[in-house]
Length: 124
Image 1 (cartoon, rainbow, N blue to C red):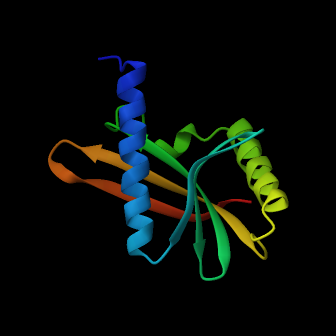
Image 2 (tube, rainbow, N blue to C red):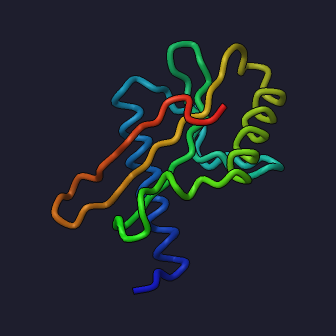
């Protein structure tokens, strides 16, 4: 069954909220969500242990398309790095180290809780 754009958007929002809740439980402080830069959107910007963390969230409704992380293309990697660098250059309060994490969120039909996988420093 093909997903309509609005269903995909709802799934994406659900996944981003699940990822934000997960990161908050781990002690990350949310700085911004869906932050737009000239290079693209950053799903989540958080602070953790003195580091700025830029998070790309990938959500899947099922595993029929493969694991969510495989959808991060080389072009997407370039956009993520450019977006993070842009943010750091244009926010004087954002100093010090930063990294890009990927959080995958998979909806499971048999379980109301999503399967969440956190890849720290996934893109460098």
